[in-house]
Length: 414
Image 1: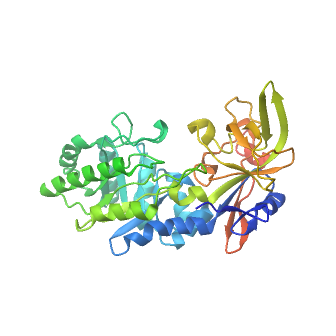
Image 2: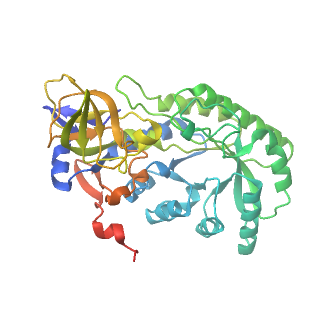
Image 3: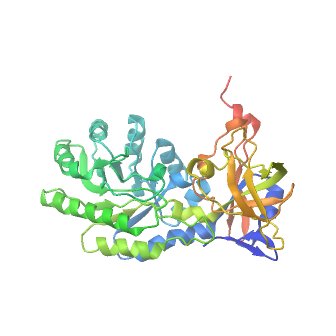
């Protein structure tokens, strides 16, 4: 589902004209659909009814407090990867008992903060991390619940930067060595070794490698239980992809979750899932205004006021985002151009060699499917303030993050 649709040639989200938002907030500006976010979340929840489970939103995809509150109120848990993300979850009213802490480089300060908050579990990624967690839990006189993140050595068939399940990646512990790690961790008296965790990557379309990884994890749990480990939960991560191109269909969330349920059912396990992109990705658009048209030889450029500092995915991942005018024209795509921003880098583009409708200075555009890994990866490179964020909910819209100012850029300096 893409929430941006034309009504009487005007691009809208949930019935709200995007041009009205741009006129009041300025551009660049991120706009999100609350209805789409909740629909995607419920697509995970509903097939799991009757099975012990927690859907933990992977908030690295989009950590705005309003979106976290929306999901917390719907019953979601959260997958965090830093102390800052824990702080955001707590500020948003998230239940710490539904929080899992992932990440390969947790600091002592971050772990201690999570212990104080009372999170559900730590997805630990190395033996030194297990030892540190044990010592910090010992100081507080508590036991910390742990799931060892195992690396199943499965090729996720995705972009190299977002693939995490092969032995060449920094994440997790080789599944072939996992039993030995659990055996040695028995001596750590302040750990509850009750789970196994796995996540092989992001933007996944092929379920075959995902199910292969699940089978390897479930086989490991059988072996661990045979050794006396009381494994009570399995965290199978997230990573389900979404369609960024018009001729592409997103994987069916319900079908995927039902397949996971079939594998876990009857095993006396609480299932944790950590979807992020597939919950928020198609909920958002980035609004931007055309500044100039420029021609260099045979090359056409559409220069806009959004840049790689606002949305780095095209430059970083060679990602494709559909770009639509907020006012529909005759319907032809007669322009072949690079859509570029003002940042002083040749890598500052949002599209290259894109066939698109004719646009002119002053026209407004929407960069689609920008709800995930958009604002969260934005920067102030070239001293450019980060964009505003807007949420459309229940027939109206509101600013959920004000546009940064020049004063914001220099706060704390000097």
